[in-house]
Image (cartoon, rainbow, N blue to C red; front, side):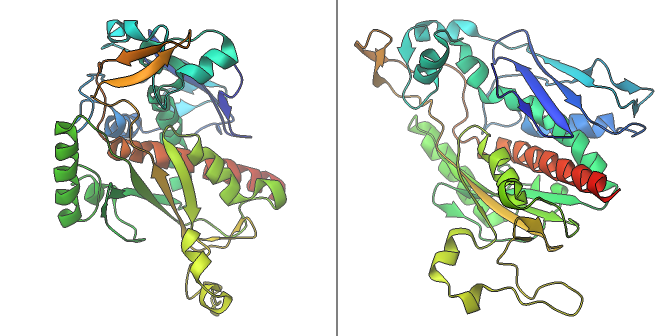
Length: 355
């Protein structure tokens, strides 16, 4: 199976399935002699794990990472970093009815067509459980980037019709005061109420996440095909349920004129506005990188649905399993991890080219 490796210099390869024995990854290209904060890595994993509140999937996974190689006495050695996270709360019996059924808007049909075989337990490899490995690598990348002053603020700005419109930089401590990781307390209450109402209906919700990255120096990214926002876009669109990404003014630029949209320079090489979202010509310009991505509603709903099986026969699909009503709050650390992987890769590549 190709497509399980991400990155150019700082590379992550992941493996594992939702209800298999474990998930894991191999990180290649990590610089040596970097002291890692393992408590911080686990804290980031805890932000993603299921069972953390009454609003998310009740699956009870500790998501404790075990490092197998590439680290000696707390420091990276420059060799591949291998790690695993063991699954403990699998319930494969919830998915026995899915051996031949094609769930609406899932990857069951497409995996069958591509491989001729699939693991129906929780979606197998197509499950968002795979993203736990991205969070491990992203947490390491974020620690490396902190040494050069690059910091991240990632938060929920919309669930369903409830929206908090902001491009401000908020601390993780402030964001995590909210059950749904929205920095605004009033919008948080509205989002929580909407999630609870939707759960009672056996339905699900989509939403959006805002990302703001500070401290990115001018000059990261490559022209033409490897533009910085193109690399970020690919990374963010690879996250389960993401349907769209915009940078800076995004689609709002459609209704603006050039004179409204242009970011005028100041004498200190900053700009008076940031409609470009910190990237011009595919290369960072030193301003904050801002982006927003849209998540579709979770495809697994607690309602009986009509679908077909692998023989093309019409069947009725009863709801089973443990699932989020809205994945967006738990997706925040995943989004931040993917952004960190892209930024570290771009930084290392730029550093190599500058030697």
